[in-house]
Length: 136
Image (tube, rainbow, N blue to C red; front, side, top):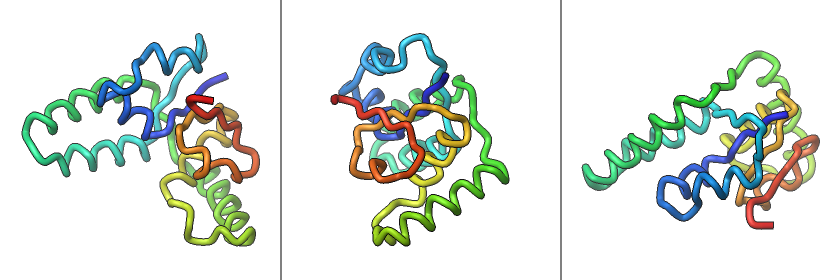
């Protein structure tokens, strides 16, 4: 079994709000993976940093995360994404979901991983997602 961790949790780790031990209390001895989507979101944060100090801190965090096993987005991920996006659209959620969130959920579902997030409302209605909510 494995875990895919939502970007918001990695941001909180970088800010010192959540410790790596806090994350490990959920994941235990299971492997933790990183998504290219998370790398893109965190890389965007590096590029948008308002000071050199913040940029360096974010860059260091990003480099530590790049050591985790990387999940690949492939044709199967794309088809899962299509199914999820269509299901959410048909349910009336429409454009209220974020594209990045659906990619992350697609990867978690594809690999039969748990998905750890603090943003329950963004993921709770995604069919087939093994959602674990940090803090609950």
